[in-house]
Image (cartoon, rainbow, N blue to C red; front, side, top):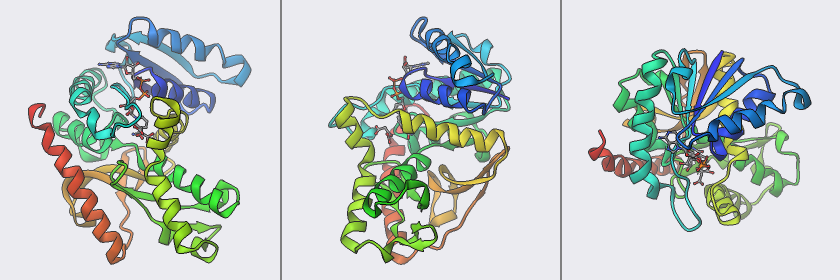
Length: 310
Ligand SMILES: NC(=O)C1=CN([C@@H]2O[C@H](COP(=O)(O)OP(=O)(O)OC[C@H]3O[C@@H](n4cnc5c(N)ncnc54)[C@H](O)[C@@H]3O)[C@@H](O)[C@H]2O)C=CC1
Ligand SMILES: O=C([O-])CC(=O)C(=O)O
């Protein structure tokens, strides 16, 4: 199976690295516009083949999309990341044009690919990709919920003082500092509701920390995060390529689900070889429904800014 990753920067290269050493795909092509950059990243990762022990064939190209031909999955990470103090939404002006032209280029050579959108503001970039390409909705998937959920589980595990892998939880809604919805009511420690162990104030803090998880890292690092984002993309790609049918919150096109239409937002999805195979309808309570509607209003406002590119 072949994966193309456009953008060989922090997130793209990390994703290529994880896909390679975990043997998720047989071939990975990295594409970037910076001369020699994707080639260099691919060569560096390939030189891990005998130490981390993998057989994935990784190559890089400066903008030659013929090398991406026949990809099963294309990941779009090209664009600028935010700096401390910025929101993801502020990136739309530059990233919309980049994402649209990249989507056109990849589809010319891989007309059957499933596209995973990572560039921010991710929900709006996913909507743009869907509208600009006219692809069926199962083949355009925004990655954000997998990452936000892994951060949620990290903060829950810290509050519980228990291993993160014993914690279950999910974040839905928009992938923004104020639009994410960590579902604390449904989170569990090995099946036992976390409310058995944590007070409401502790749960509220976990939710608040999760929502600004990306901003916290941006403040610490000077640019946005990449290890967990890259690994989260690889996790999603694994479920597609290996038809794992995992339930992963992803930003997908809604047509009435969760009370929303004509928008891409994070909801739990079954992800398999056909991309989005099902949207799982989780019964939200009234407070969660209100948060989802508010989140949708914010994402819809952002989508309105796409008028000049669509
Ligand atoms: N959805 C999510 O959960 C996450 C999204 N992001 C977003 O992913 C994007 C990438 O972040 P980083 O990798 O940290 O940035 P980065 O700056 O390290 O890498 C971006 C790369 O894209 C390349 N690029 C720009 N225009 C291009 C084009 N037209 N064609 C091919 N390559 C092009 C740049 O040369 C650069 O190497 C940002 O928009 C960031 O906000 C980052 C983390 C998580
Ligand atoms: O915070 C950012 O700008 C990058 C991102 O989406 C994340 O790490 O969640």
